[in-house]
Structures are given as structure tokens and as C-alpha cells.
Length: 325
Length: 253
Ligand SMILES: Nc1ncnc2c1ncn2[C@@H]1O[C@H](COP(=O)(O)OP(=O)(O)O)[C@@H](O)[C@H]1O
Ligand SMILES: [Mg+2]
Image (tube, rainbow over all chains, first blue to last red; front, side, top):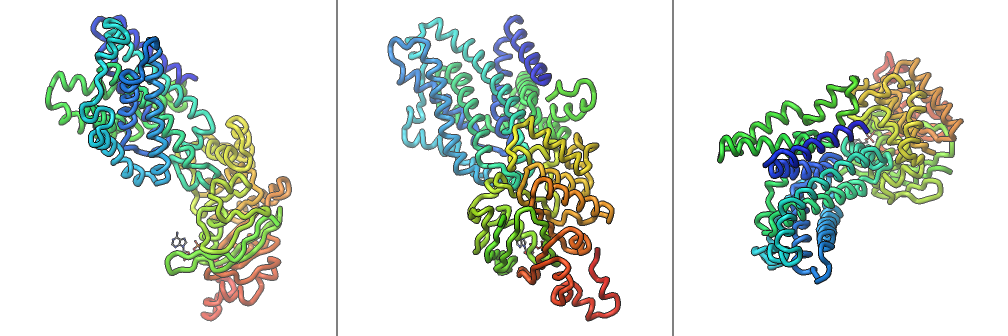
């Protein structure tokens, strides 16, 4: 449980800074998006060792789920109940996609899986644009719908505050889920799969089943993040904005930087990455990627187990053992 | 009959690694499989444990045709094995490694129970001091013992050991054989030990042996009888005998 305490303390500090220091809520929310993205992705990449290059499609579909709920599902009298309905639809859509992708691609081994997922994201984007699905390339704009449903002030409050709080909560929930999984049979099964898939099979582990379970769980949280951090916050969804491979790359970087499969890794990785990106764009606008990329490579080379993975090794046997998980 | 292997064949490209082999193993039996390098022993294990599908033939376990079952569905029925080249989950501890066997093998233990089973078998194979070390840091010999504990923690009814005694000194071999006889009697596990060269170990351990040669079953029967058969001596020592001199000691042990 001590690892969870460390996690809760970091979250509490972020929340207090964001709420009490004037002007800090938006920067904190910016960091929290990366933390939550890392937490959600860690459940798949961290626990199975598989890389999904199409991961952002889950956020994108979640984002559409919320937009569709606001735009087409709303009935008078539903009121604020449309928020949980939107989240539910977002989660459902991401889960459906993860089932479809997982059932086919998760039968493949590591590198083959990664290659198979590259097309998922672009494929879905072209499907939406080409088939004029969900507004095609014009996307769905829900600014008006939200004002009608919640009133102007409340709609504003939702996109400037509620959306961020949701992302905060989803990230925390994803982290606690990771903690629970790690300590259950599922966690041991995933560890075995990560370490030696063939040996895991012979030990009686249904590797496809456990990989799909981790994939679905990860996609579920990704969908909720897309619905909150994008649709509720921006009040629109454009395919060209949400199906961006950049987010997948950022998710991979955050998990690797913090420490794949660790509980605190995505928090540390998300905050580190977010701060670097933010300050580099302030100090050297336009050059941030030029500096960020080699810097990240250097960090990952120096700490192949990630920052938390490295610290975990260092505190082994000391009284801090257990606080870093 | 616990295991029936019926006319099983496995090809790799043009090579017939296992060629229509049939044999049976009784419950609780101590069975030995011997044969020179490349004679198809490991491939046979791979087919019984579900790593490979045979090209033809059937495998019956406890009266049930398991030929088409995936590996992960065979372990819970009670088939446990070790690997010729040990395959620990390297960054997990020895305790966690062995616990995985208890969780997903026939024991189907929950996490707490699995840790207790793990501790029991780690102690039995003499690895208690290494219990909290990462399995990847063990010596090759310790890795073998860890795999033995992990397979035993599965609570198998059939235990397939792939060269588990290779590289051990006579004292260690004696200990392992004693340990295997103990679990065999206490837990009614049929133990199949396969060796390339350790003939004296197999004479001490097995009641019956099967000799493999170039993918085929050469002979099967009571251990001493089979190992003293002329054809078997031919397979192992033929070359050396023809070369003369040190012939009889030709089998490296
Ligand atoms: N996966 C494989 N692919 C190709 N050839 C293989 C494979 N596994 C085993 N073989 C070949 O099958 C034959 C039998 O090998 P094996 O079962 O490992 O023998 P043993 O365990 O008796 O030494 C050898 O010629 C080996 O090279
Ligand atoms: Mg072999």
C-alpha cells in the first residue's frame, strides 16, 4: 500500500497547487493530461510489453462518443445525465475497437502486433473522412449543443474545470486499477507474458486472454480521457486533431521515461515530459522538438528501466523500499 | 494409463524430428527417455506439453485426446515441464516465478496460496536463500532447480524433465533423484526424465526407459535390460567401439 500513498501524495500536491496558486490550474491540467495518458497506456504497454502504434484511436473514438452523445443522443429532460451517458458511450466505443483490434492482432507476437496496429489509426481516420461518418472531415462541433443543454455559464465551467477534474480522476482511477491488477493473478500472468510468452503458455497461462483483458482496460481509460480532455474541453472533435500519431508517440515516451509497468512511472514520466515540453516551447519556441527528442533519447538510454524503475532498484533493501512502486 | 502417445510424427521442413513414436506412461511411474543429441527427445516433450502440434498421431492424457489442445489448456490438466535451456521469468523473483506455476498449473491457486506453495517447493529444492533474488541472476544450476520447483508447484500429474541433471555433480544428481522419488511417492506424480548422457543417473532413477535414435523409438523396456541391449550400445558407443581403445567409457557422464 505504501506505493499507493506516494501516488496519492503526488496527486494531492498537484491538485493543491492547481487550486490555490493563481493561474496554475491550466498548467496543472496540461500536466494531468499527460499523466492520465501515461497511466492508461501503461496498463497495456507497461503490463504486457506490447507496443500499440494505433493507441490514439481509442482516445479519438472516446472523443467521438462524447460528441455524439451531446450532439445526437440528447433528449430534453436528461440534463446533466448526458455527461455520464457520454462517458459511457465513449468507453463503449473504445472498448469495441479494442476488442476488434485485439481479437485479430493480439494473436501476433510483439513486433508483428506493433506493425499491425500502425494502420488502425490512419485507417479509422480515412474511414471517417472518406465515408463522411460522424460529420466526416468537418467533425462534430458541440459548442452550441452544450450551451443549450447546460446554459452558457455551466457549459463554460464544464470545459474549463469539470473536463480537467475528470481527466484528473480518470488518471487516478487508471493508476489504482494498475495497482490492483499487479497484485492479482492477472498481474502475475502479465508479468510472465512480458518476460517469456512461450514459457508462460506452458505454465498454463492463456496469453491471448490476458493480453486482451489488459488491452480493453487500457482502451477503456483512453476513451474516457478522449471524451473529457478533448471533447468536453474543446467542445468540438475534428478527425485531423484527434487521430494524431503524435499522441501515441507521447504516450510511449511518457511510459518509457517514467518506467514501464511501474505504478508511479506514468506520473513521473507525464510530469517530466509535460514540463520539458512546456518550458522548451517558452524558452525556445519552434525548436522544442529539436531539443526534446535527443534529450528524451538520452534519458531513456541513461535509465532503460525509466526513472521510477531506476529508483526502485536503488531503494531496494532500504527503508524507502515499497514507497517506490 | 496416464499418457498415451500414439504414432506421433513431427517434421521440420524436410527433417523428420520425431518419426511415428508411440509409448505409454502409467500413473506415478518413473520413466526415462534416453537418446543422443538430436534424436527428437525435446521435440517429443514439446508435443506433449503443447508447444508444437504433431503432424500426425494422437496424444491421450488421462483418457482425453489433447492433441489439439493449446499449451495453456494442458497445464491445468496436470502436465508440467522444465526446459532444456532454462526459461525463468528473469526479472521476477524466484518466489514469484514458482508462484506463477502454482497459480496457473493444476493447482489454480490464488495469490496468497500460491506464495505458500512456492515457499514449500523452493525449500524442497534448496533455494530458500535465493527466494527473493531476481531469477535472471541465478547460476545455470540454480535456474534448473528453480524450474523444477516451478513445475512441481503446478501440482502436475505428469512431470517432464528436460536434461534437468545436466551439468550437476554426482552428489547433486543423487539429491535430485532422491527428491524426485519423494515427490513421486508423496504426490503420485509420473516423472519422465530425459537425458543425453547421464546413463548412471537414469539407471538409478527410472523403472522403464525408452531409447530414441534419429527420431525413432529404438527400444523400450525395463531400464537395465534396455541399456545393456546391443542395439543401444551400438547407438551410443558404436563409433567409439569401432575406433577401438577407450570404447566402453565412451559415454560422457
Ligand atoms: N524448431 C525447430 N525447427 C527446426 N528443426 C528443429 C526444431 N526443433 C528441433 N529441430 C530438429 O529436430 C531434431 C530433434 O531435435 P530435438 O528434439 O531437440 O532433439 P534432442 O532433444 O533429442 O536433442 C534435431 O535435428 C533438431 O535440429
Ligand atoms: Mg533436447
